[in-house]
Amino acid sequence: MIRRSRPTSSKHSGDAAEAKARLAAHLARAGLNHSRTRDAVVEAFLATTGHVSIEELTAVVRGRGPAVGYSTVYRTMKLLAECGLASPHDFGGGLTRYERTLERAHHDHLICTACGAIFEFEEEGIEALQREVAHRYGFEVLRHKMELYGRCASCRRRPK
Image (cartoon, rainbow, N blue to C red; front, side):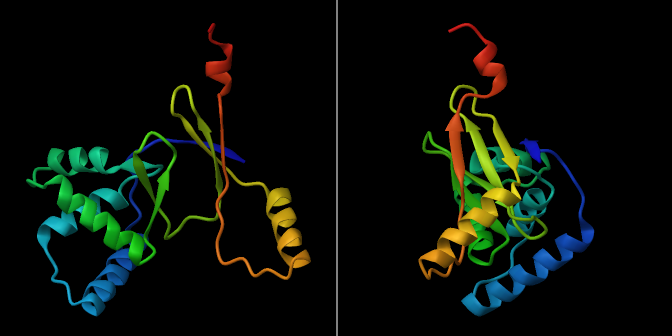
């Protein structure tokens, strides 16, 4: 299954409540305070799908009204990653992108080096092969990611 990934709005109230509860517990353990600005960032992030950068998320939050700085968004995303609600990815170009992880099944990525498009895919055959290789070497896999870089079909059709 291949999905083209783009940041778009989407409502998941049950998932959002679970995410907020998990973040609240993480903040309490870390001795950090709750803030309305952080809530605005979390709300904006939970309303995205796909892979969003700090810059894109900052623009979304500012578009909703609250004055928020880049560093606040950066720190909030770091907290979300620490408590397992966001997964950071560096697909090249020095830009970290984040995706929600709460309700997401494991998937891998195809990244177009020409246009920057990111395609998500799930392939059980690849997952089975990875499990087999790990077993053969007596290795316990805790997590993994696969990113394939190349040119998408649209970019390959364009003249060079």
